[in-house]
Amino acid sequence: MKESIISNLFRMPLSRAELVVLSGEEYDKKNNEMLKRQRALLNTLSKEQRALFDEYENSLIAITEVEEDENFRQGFALGIRVTAEAFLCSEVKG
Image (cartoon, rainbow, N blue to C red; front, side, top):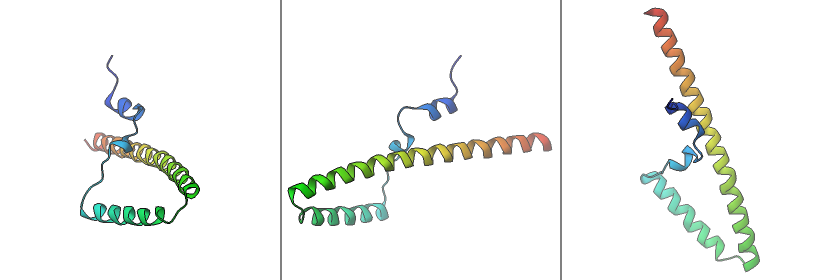
């Protein structure tokens, strides 16, 4: 038996959040500002401080991935519940 689309999406080893590619004028502007400030900060740091910053940045990326994955799971679960409720309500009225 073929596994359902819902099961496939929910159990994917790749985070669905990783598939989202942000773009647009506002995002690009804010991202460029952040990168400019990051370069300015890195230019003021010693070698040891840069290594510490890299470790911090890697930790921030890791925790952000966990948060985005959980946000996706919560949103997905909410969407399923709303769809199920709408389906059940239409059956009652129908």
